[in-house]
Image 1 (cartoon, helix red, strand yellow):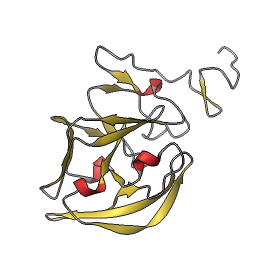
Image 2: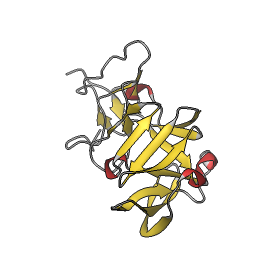
Image 3: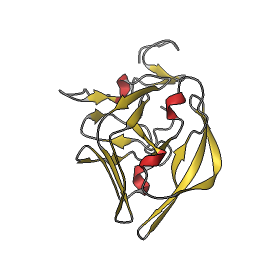
Image 4: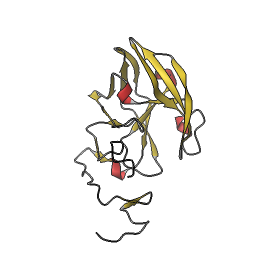
Length: 180
């Protein structure tokens, strides 16, 4: 194995990444390994739909994607786009870039999804566009769609990424990847 230094492209947060087999993106695709750290925020007009309990709860083209190295995009949607009430679920967590996340419970149809969404009421500098927006863990929803494509939830529920055919990995989140 070739020696590497902390500034080398094969080191992320002090850990070697040269053992990770990056998937080369095809035409029209993007690799999560090309996303920056700290994360970028990108406006999108893709149609985002979410269903819970057999009920459509969001249908909007007003979204932003947070793009961070090794993570599938996370979509943040305007709170007013949700067609169901959101209730504080208690508990906070801190993102080193975005600030303090507040968790939300959503209920629709026959489902109650506890701590299935989060928001940054007062995001830190550089992420102000997230104020008033909500992200969901797609694994806790019935179905999430980007345009007309049903997404695959990112493994694990720590990050809440949305995997479409447009995005290639490998993706952080599955067992054994937290050290990436």
